Image (cartoon, rainbow, N blue to C red):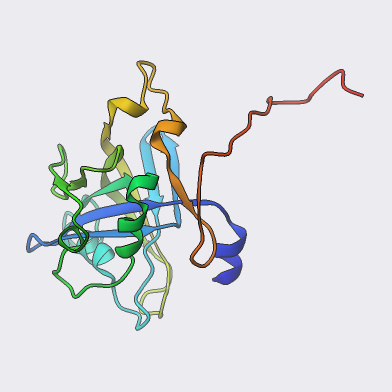
Length: 204
């Protein structure tokens, strides 16, 4: 685990909101997260099992709220991108709460209605992806800390006008996203440089 989180850096953060079958919402960050495809527009994040091998609330909500059969397929969730302004509330949400208690209430972030899924999005997030689960892969069911992969199809995108232009280009300075390093370390995306694609000819 330490070799992974210390070597694969920086990692983007999926701040995932879900809702239980009983209507209780949940909000948790995951730094094993990536875009998968633009067609279909899809992404994945990886919730781990609890230290005892059970299901954390995010995965439990997805598995219970799918189309049936406990596979999670069809369950709705929202991936909220973490800007520097909400980094501290995001980190607080990594601490476990009793099942049924909402992190929204704990940290004071605002629920905003989604368009296509039942789970709320985070109003303070400037970029949010509403998703429906396409597949849940249980890598180590019942194993303490075992991995799981949730693949979601993006069905709606909420983006603040401040961070996107008419060509759908995201302004990285305005988004001001944060990434996860190893341990308690995080980073910003403020230090950037351009590099040409392909071979550089005529030098030397």
